[in-house]
Image 1 (cartoon, rainbow, N blue to C red):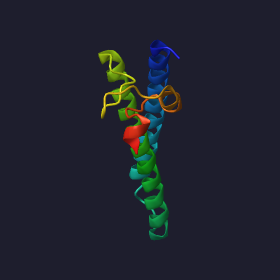
Image 2 (image 1 turned 180 degrees about the horizontal axis):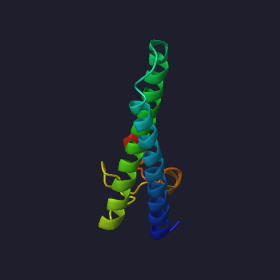
Image 3 (image 1 turned 45 degrees about the vertical axis):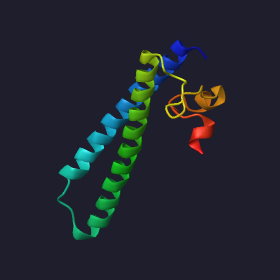
Image 4 (image 1 turned 90 degrees about the horizontal axis):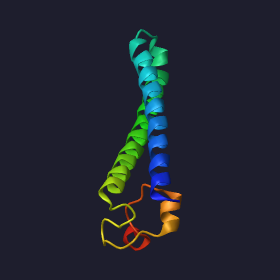
Length: 107
């Protein structure tokens, strides 16, 4: 996969995640606005909020990873391990194009 294809793939994933994040924020606002509920609903509402916050946290982490990978592409350092400066194995980049460590440095 060429660098331009990787960049396009990352940008597309970023856009999709931003849409999902927007939907999660809308749902969170609905849950927050519906704070008029019975005491028996409190545990359910709490779990619902926690679920949304957990999903949001995962998406924000992935968006951060994508942003860093796009920055490395723009800087010309994509595919280079940030720890040892060796080339990252192509198979690792295919599995996760946002990875910034080679196999040796992950261990």
